[in-house]
Amino acid sequence: KNEVEQSPQNLTAQEGEFITINCSYSVGISALHWLQQHPGGGIVSLFMLSSGKKKHGRLIATINIQEKHSSLHITASHPRDSAVYICAVETSGSRLTFGEGTQLTVNP
Amino acid sequence: NAGVTQTPKFRVLKTGQSMTLLCAQDMNHEYMYWYRQDPGMGLRLIHYSVGEGTTAKGEVPDGYNVSRLKKQNFLLGLESAAPSQTSVYFCASSYPTHHSNQPQHFGDGTRLSIL
View 1 (cartoon, helix red, strand yellow):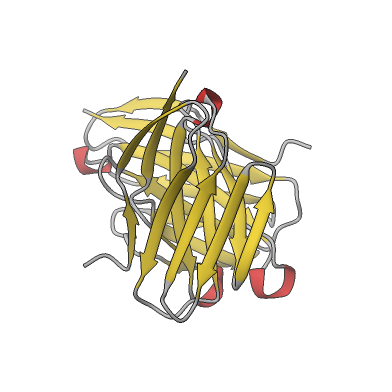
View 2: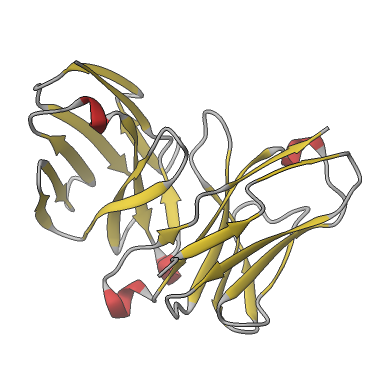
């Protein structure tokens, strides 16, 4: 069993839909990261959180430390949101363990 | 401000050849990392460095060596390339996150094919 599990692996939505991507982990962590990988391959950090909830524009990330679970929500999805979304957990020494990613496709 | 720059962006090698991937960051980050990304798998840590002159093994270090002679540069070497090392390689850098609460910054990746 992977230390970091994401679901779903693939997600197709229509423009405007509310999207949720889930991440579960099995180890003790100091923080959880959500990243976005564009079709061209570049990776950017979206959120880094250790408790509660963070919001940036149409993106919201939540974490429940007791349940070892995090969700990434996208409100009013748009085709430009199409990308791979990656969950990663931070353990000791700022090291990250990554999930396999969720491929999101938003159709116009 | 260029961030994290990886060179080259693409490379094709023959089995047994050697090469070095260069990562340079201009953000004065202490920590630097090399990852590989393979289909159906998450990013995996190859080697990392917590400061100039120091390196450590990650999850999949075999077949790779690294050096951090200058704070801004982190080199990944393949001494004798094997087809199993065909992958996309990403470099990242960060401050120690327990001090800064800031995430890692990634380069654009190097696509490496070993024939």
